[in-house]
Length: 381
Image 1: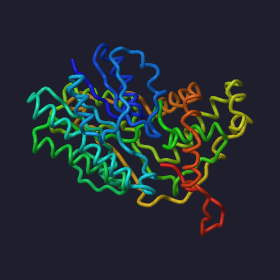
Image 2: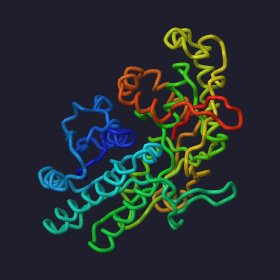
Image 3: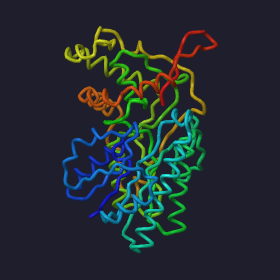
Image 4: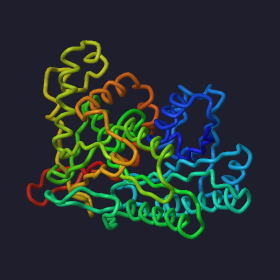
């Protein structure tokens, strides 16, 4: 039976993994370590916080001694490392935090794992799983083949560069020190508990609130979308059967241009509110509450620096080796995600506090476009 340390377990993907693991592996010890920055939320753990096998530890992954103490005290044999700064726009405006958390923090975890599992205990029964991103591979043109595990790294933003550096450190600790590591590089995740600075939750909240839907550039940037529950199953398979030292790409096989995604979300909200008078009463600022189309909120905004054009994941390796298959189609996943946000309005209203709104106002402020002189706003990730 595995005994897990889950870093970043109060954040979006981490908390979904904790929910998934406790449901699938009852009785197995899970320790969550989270610094509770703006993107970490203890409310996301409330449905499982009463479980006796779960412990929450408020702390920073950069604290090597604290991590080592947790590994010893709890007799943990597995680290699943989600903790990261992940918002590209934030990395452009303030890259230092990304280097500190994603590079220095990952190294601190690796040092603690090596100290306890190799130097002190000398046991082969351990695993350090590192959760990374497809953004380390750079950008694809429309006809380029999808990213595979041997695609050369070509990060474009401080965020992706910091994740690329952490990937290399993880590999180095396997090759040099014999640490049993695995890495997964995933495509864009979406689903419950997603902080509303990322594209899908931001669009859902803005639609419901009747605010502009900022879309970068021409909106034709393409992403491969992966529902977070499929991602969690992929990581579970890697922990169970993945080979130490290996990298596995996890994707959803659901490529979609940003503008098409936003229009799909608008259509879902149009349908839901047309059929539900209660939703129309709850969200009167939404165009659909007045019988209008939510697409009217779409606003094209100035593109961000170094914006990758297309991501796509080749999942062939994890499919062949571990039997992984993404289960949830994008349209169904978007409908489920919208329904979750409607059913959990107190959660997202709580996380959208004054500090976040201040950041939004600072970095998504109106700008004039040279071509038309029409006021536009800068956009989301």
